[in-house]
Amino acid sequence: MFYRQYFVSPTGRLSLVASEQALYGMWLEGQNHFRLVLRKRKLVDISNPILEVTKKWLQAYFKGESPSPDDLPLAEQGTAFQQRVWLALSEIPMGQIRTYGQIGKAISCQSAQAVGTAVSKNPWLILIPCHRVLPSSGHLGNYAVGEDVKCFLLRLEGLRFDNP
Image 1 (cartoon, rainbow, N blue to C red):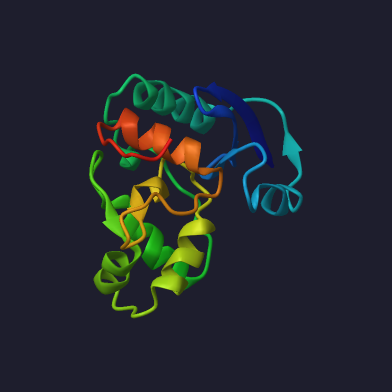
Image 2 (image 1 turned 135 degrees about the vertical axis):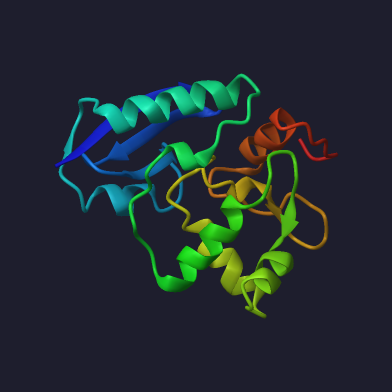
């Protein structure tokens, strides 16, 4: 059984999905890949302990704290390549950024485009910080839920950009 709860954040309403054992995803409604993943699951709109811990994690994050993603059990999903990319994302400290090329180099992949594709399919928005990855041009670049949300999250973490 999969459980879903909503969390109203400064960026919009997040849908949190978990089983009894792990968190399967954290998506902003309307996010790319959101409907595709959720339509494959039978969801019950009640909470469970994992969702409660996830909501506390989000509350701390949006207060400007730096909660550890290690506090949440994440469901094993994605391809082996995606998992390598997502692990590299999880190692980017709060308030820091990396480029797609730097992530590629860290995981021995020469294709920044392949890294970008894996980043865009990250099922744990905010928790696995795909917003901390920028193109080598230094611009904000694309983001599954929009440039304004990416900019908001980076500013929350203390980074400043000329973009919106």
